[in-house]
Image (cartoon, rainbow, N blue to C red; front, side, top):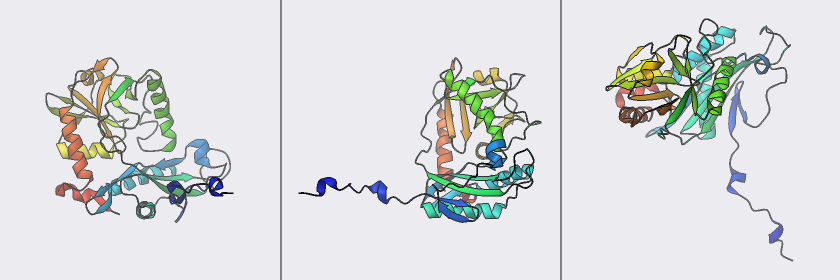
Length: 302
């Protein structure tokens, strides 16, 4: 009797190393459960996170604008009184990338209040921090997004500061669900005066007669990709009414995950070709991969 039919084939996936996650000072199996059921952040959103990207460069993997991400995360942690050490978080990001052998990667650092009693007070809850990395080959793929003007308003900055606080993103989830239910890819927030704020997770720019303008709004996240594009282009930034955005020649969104994403439609308004956006996509791609020496200081080698 042949035994070959009873042998389970050994697949490449079976030998693939398990992803590592940095958790409270050490690298652990990313599949190991770590959050207790009384975790404060799970019940009340008392955490802060960042979205960061690493890119393959000629000299190896490098993280784009890591100090700026860590500083913004520190500001969010301070709002909660959550202990956060940017230097420790920086080393955790680099250690996780090394452990997972990632070059092109999306990086998620997260700090939060953990186990303790129920209630809104954070005192007495255990603070935690983790870093996870996910390999990604998605880079400036040119997908043109369709935006729906959301019925939900962005959290006003005098109610919630425009930082990456975990609980604040319920607002984005609701807006995106509503837009997708109407057949759009993404939601565009506007304020009660009809001014543009931002998308659910990206800032907005537009082009008119060759001039690039960034949407400025006090309720919008001060995006690091947005700041990058402002420095690269010298674009102006100001309050922008929705009517002006609809009259633009080109519209694009930007963010760490989105990079530079052209917009094809806002509600019933269709946009044509995106030549300026494509030029910015190409420039941004060279910058994040260390191919523009003037901006090499934005990269932290892994």
